[in-house]
Image 1: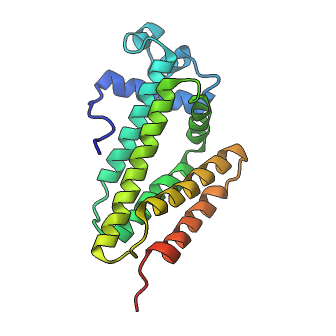
Image 2: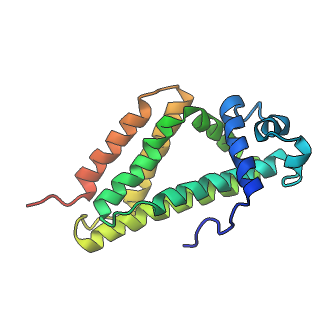
Image 3: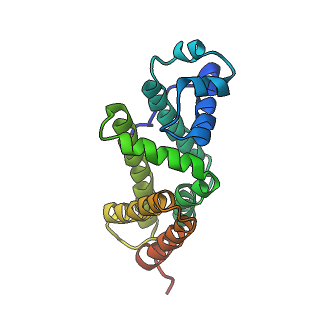
Amino acid sequence: MAEPSDRTASEPDEAIMEATYRALREHGYADLTIQRIADEYGKSTAAVHYYYDTKDELLAAFLDYLLDQFVDSIHDVETTDPGERLELLLDELLVKPQENSDLSIALLEMRSQAPYKDAFSERFQQNDEYIRYMVKAVVNHGIDEGVFNDVDADHVTRALMTIVNGGRTRAVALDDNGALETARRTASEYVDATVRRQSQ
């Protein structure tokens, strides 16, 4: 599978993405405006519009930016051990969001717009496909190395993503601070019970 994006962000692009990040955390999706992004950027709205014609175009680019960051964080994982790598992936998906609940709320708001905005839908689908690809690749690697049971990797991946998505949605929609911790523990229990080969 190809990398989600092979573009390199320019310095102004990077600064606008960081400004968007801060504005989304502060105001949420519903109250986000180009003016508020420009305020965080420290320049005029015209400076933002120089790169992006509309707010939706900017936010589609922001979703690309977030996925690129996720990909970079996965590439930075040095271990090749399948068990450790799967645990680190699950940490990225369920522990890291605990550090930034405001952004999680904004992303859920954006996800709710995906049925009506093709650009958002495409990005969220791409994000989901890439994460499933990464998880499935680790599971298959573990099977090949003999440290995981000979499981249906596609089914395991979908089960883990159901736990991940359920935990993340519950944490935001119900303001349930423990949902991500519960989901992380449940994911590990599922891996231990179903995937990880027990020593004889």
